[in-house]
Image (cartoon, rainbow, N blue to C red; front, side, top):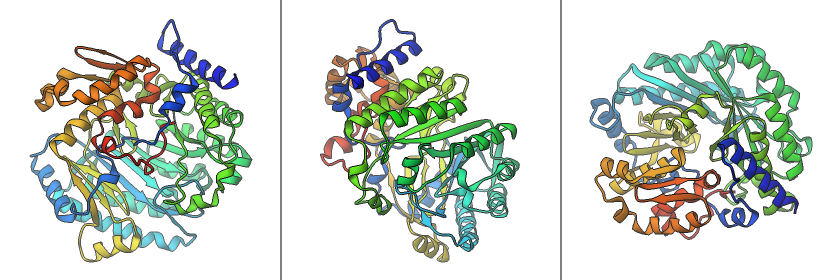
Length: 483
């Protein structure tokens, strides 16, 4: 009975936020039916489909074509991603590409290597390309000292033209920064910060080997606001060991009281066969499937009751945040960092394991430092795999991103952009959506379909209908669960 009550509360809260008279019929049975492994669609095709046949030569060709203006979107501002893999300690839940070390001497050669990679990229692309979006991820980017971060930013500014009103963000482990460090990051041009909080409960923090008091996070958020950061994001994870629906509801309430501009709330994917640190988490201390559903439902209800808007895919934002405005105005985009207000930029990715997108291609760098350094010693770009998208990939990417970002699909728009008969091309996929329509997740007519308020909760599941690779693949253990 309690589970049903919390789910209905979530439905009513969102219905109120959407201005609906009747709450969507969200229930536990529907949540369980949709709780299957599936991609997060930060790209399509997803990174697990990249091939080794795409290497440095193919990447150089893509850069040259972008520089020559022969690909769609050429001439617009770029997005840049820099991966910093180092962490001082391991968080047991982590599935990121990281190197756990207390040897800060490893940073200098890495910064040199990234600068070398950057020189190879801009030799093909040209110096002075405009950039409107920069993101430092990891690992722990603030593993680098102030002087090291300064040196890395200088390398980037020597090669790119950073636009005045761009979004320049960095991921921060609250245990690694002070007010003074935030001040230095602001002086380097960062105007957005993302704090990795995950959970505030001491028992959960101990279970995942990440102790950070809530007061520490609160003080840093106060500092960030005082320093003029334009946006503060907080990352949370549900489904961690020792969590319960009640304890996570408390975390949501405390985080919402801090008023971050945005919240990203991810479901923990326990894949110890792929990620070694997760082997330290005994499966018996993980929440049950029913408890995960309870956490999700209470969290959505909690953030909405505190005035946040549900963006989609576990993301929330305050109503006046540009992300919420972009969703209301149909300007939402999605890239490897998640939802974005930036147009569909080409993405230059730098550093070990970093994934980029140039024109109709994706590329990924070597996943180990040894391989990354070895390629650069040979004066070769460290790309080890990627993908040149087919026409079918491009059509499906457009459809999936329209669903993920706008919650709708216009047959006419896709037909005009890709010169296809949408109803014929996607006959099987559209037929499969009828079950979703019957469940109240979307409405269909002759011109297309649109997600309901209820359907937004299952946007990944609905988008999967158009994923040719997932439809052909009956084993999806490589993905996290939709719920």
